[in-house]
Length: 71
Image 1 (spheres, rainbow, N blue to C red):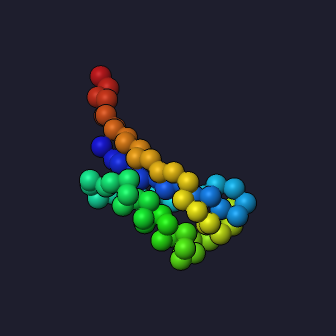
Image 2 (tube, rainbow, N blue to C red):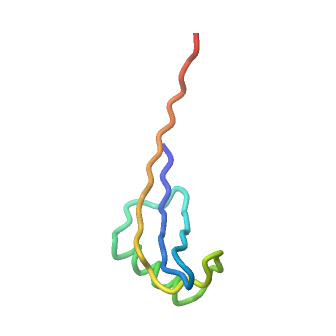
């Protein structure tokens, strides 16, 4: 099972996403929002959509892989 935390930001020219593989757990909405606000204020990332300006939303993507044995 692989989890990814996807942080979605408003950028100068649209929406920008930052993915974090295997995020620590548990994460609260307040912790995620605080981290996203710090990222936006620090202008840490440059994206194809321009500078990140504000937190928009976040989500956890959970993927499970199951091997299938062929006869």
